[in-house]
Length: 286
Image 1 (cartoon, rainbow, N blue to C red):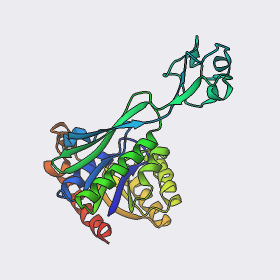
Image 2 (tube, rainbow, N blue to C red; image 1 turned 135 degrees about the vertical axis):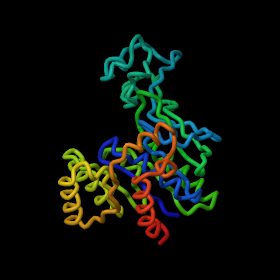
Image 3 (cartoon, rainbow, N blue to C red; image 1 turned 90 degrees about the vertical axis):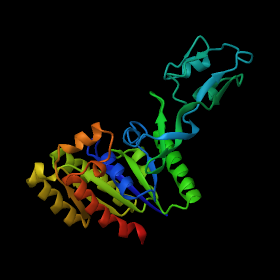
Image 4 (tube, rainbow, N blue to C red; image 1 turned 180 degrees about the vertical axis):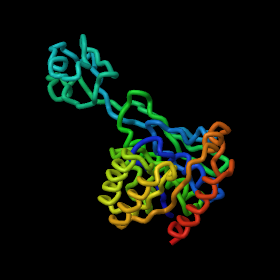
């Protein structure tokens, strides 16, 4: 089983749009995983039908047993997040540090699991998709990404699929690391802007650190040919292959409005993505 993760150093570079098109080109031979759990949007294009729901237990929160509490005030005094008032825990403020359990002389405080989000197994017109939703304000999105990838691996084994296509999180933080860990190939989407160059350098540093084979795709490359050439030179110096350059096409927005992939809608970007797929597929079959 091969795993391809599409990532970017910043949001809005087109990675989800690309991933949806690759899902179309996979012709049902891949399991899809939306690991951008903080702001998932792959479902907007694929219109999934949920068949399984799994609770995600994130950070634990404190709970005070009123029958054991002596109201000594130690927990409230030592809680740096001001989550305890009148011997009651406000879960919105509790960060799960557990200091209250350490200072309570009556052992009246315990840490309990709470549902921080949900992971879903769904059917789409391109095959099975695993996606998730983190409850607003909750944390530990890296753990939820790991849960999504684990479910995707299990589904791929059960369905005897040899490919998992992963829509990774943007940036360089914990969710991104969870998105690329163990992946066979990372495809980085970038743009020909100064911020795009900066963020590309940062995310490449992450993939190289974890030893993940890396390719780069420049979206809307023809909007700034000078910066595009700068990116290509930098990639060559770093020994990173350029997978494809996608042209700017207003029709991409029309495809999104129609809730279709770019491939289904057609146009110059669709042709470039098909060339990209021909470039990727042999590496994912080795």
